[in-house]
Image 1: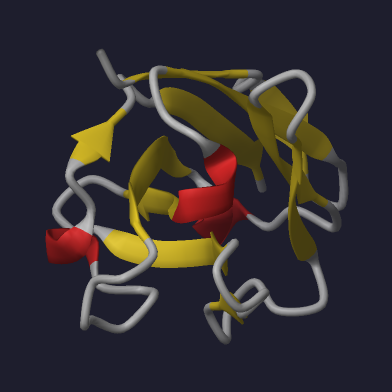
Image 2: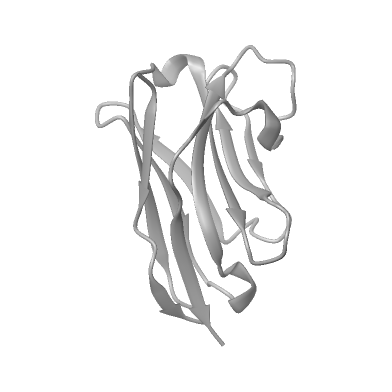
Length: 126
């Protein structure tokens, strides 16, 4: 079974850093795309950082570009989201998701991701 478990969220001050982890099982990283999404209260789910292992394509939303970095460790079956210079507007529940690489969809499209973790809360104080 495909399972994803996000962790590493917490409380951090503006300008601080946090690293989220996504422990994965039940699928090969080489044939899947991994995406980090977030959802703040009363706001739509937003694609934050995504990686396509099929062609090496990486996507970052404009709001996090140059501050967040997505990576993964194949041996540990774990994906990461390194978040630096955090801002209050980054406060949200962050979700890890996966999908196959052959899907005809944009990398940031949440609807194309078939498997989702439970989410982890990130709170950035102002």
